[in-house]
Length: 423
Image (cartoon, rainbow, N blue to C red; front, side, top):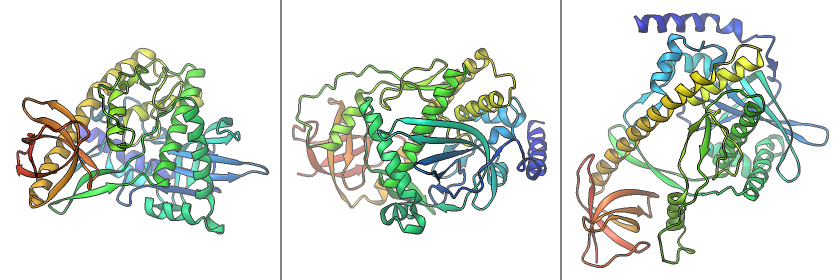
């Protein structure tokens, strides 16, 4: 019965979509040149950016897809999304939080299509602080769907006719410097991810390019300014907080020239992050408050924020503190379960990848001993930009930070992988 109700709601939303997209209450921002930047295979296109040129300044616009302008809170679609909490991306399949038909045809910020959005417009001071900001429900039209490589090219070369992304990149780099002065901690590093090509596990290395940094900083900006607004207007939402207590790194070696180990130890010392109804400081971002609000198609915490913003901006009753607190508990618990699923999936396919490359020798850095007596440790694979928990057989006394060569000796799917030092 539930599926029948969901399918009926989907049919109604699709049939009413073209009428609702011409909503005269929403601000028309279709005149702005608007970009999405994402992986070429991405389906859930949540965010887009624009640059408005004023007489003596620029206004940066960040547009976030607005499924909350279509879905009713406590509808069958909403309840199903809350059960899932987020989209789960596994190597062999993706479980979408919202119905794929709606993602593809109504919610995603598709190129050349009018879409509803919750848009943030920001004018900055010279030091990267905010001079002026506004939040509006809008209608946008994406002019260019770019992947990260295409966006990097536009940022690097900044052609006269397409200089917007280069300007936006400069603005947001300045904003990042402002956050650093407030104590923000930034870790810029490439990372390796196992993906499937057909039935074969392949390693994809993700570099922290300018376009990826641009999108990251834009999303942080959006989450912070929405949190400032919800805090000011006493709107109950799930704030994303990080404990400010930094544990001391238990390491007596010199790490100043070992960025990989330094980054690992820095992440290890940071306080945990979680959702909370109280607007508390997010330590590593250097912000007094922060929320996840930029992925409402694939994360329920963000969708809940959009429900509340939609209600507030339209003078409707807010979802109560008590209900929001209950949902926050669900998000924290189920979110952890989804993270475990993704990690287990990566661990399994890492093991399969090592099996396919068993003839290789690997240069690694020992990041940490988990259990020295059982030879259990964390190794970082230098050429491939990823780390994994494994067992290391060695007759030598290896210390944290040492760089050694190893080979894979056994494969245990969902268990620990075994390596042996090559002397």
